[in-house]
Image 1 (cartoon, rainbow, N blue to C red):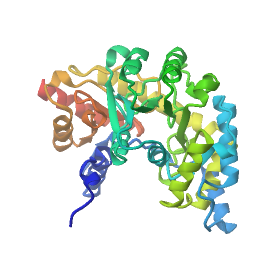
Image 2: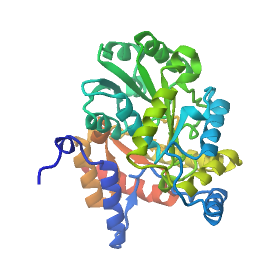
Image 3: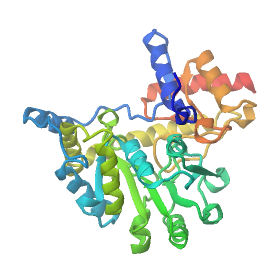
Length: 388
């Protein structure tokens, strides 16, 4: 059997593969400390689950609108206006099967073969793969610790060509945890406007911030940038709803209608009763979000101190999300070999930086309990000392 050529051009997700391997080892009775998955360890808040159960009891189990339940689209538009300063209406919003799906719908709707998409590295590993699937060209712009792993306006301007269609911005970032400052966002917005390209702002971690860091939606900075902005977001990280598969895309009506057409022929609507859980998430108290954020902040501090105390490892203090992205270059190992050996010898699962375009780094998630963090850091320290 000959598969479509596009399949061979796409790399399977390393994050999902390593998380699955760690789970398989645990199922075999092996004590694994996993820092691999970008998934909060908290249960979905009870009031959100109750809203979905109520929707089930009320018979909300049928097909729905491809673009999402009208009440949820309205709630998302209200959230974007009040939280982010983005003047969207429900017609500017499509509900998708997770934040990842919102980005995929956008790429399919906007990118033709040969169109260029600018992606700063380190990047979330699915961005370039989505571009590849539609025949687009990923223009990877490397960043490093000297700029906080952030693309500069000069780098962005230099990367733009007549074929550039889209710039992908992710703040707070997966995998680095960095957050662009308001001034940095303003400078990037000016480049986007000057070049007359689109920007998609992936804001899935917007609620998970530390030490006074401020999240700014790039589209809120004026009409010219607003008209060129798409917002990708979802419920997985802030509300611990990863398995619910609920995300959304907001932007110009023409693009949202195109994404709705694509979704109508691919997945139809998002799970109907689950969307009522999302409505409850947006319209109820946000105390649950803050409680989880505070727990992440404590875990971040412990893991950061432990990591930076290990000779040969160094990592910057992240301002958001729930990841650390240490430099492992002093160990003499590249990321994949480092991660394979760490899991094999000490049963600690982390993600190789090569998946994110940075082979001298690894990604650790602190979205896990404190006991696992302490035990895993003990094991990581032993491993690194054995290599240096």
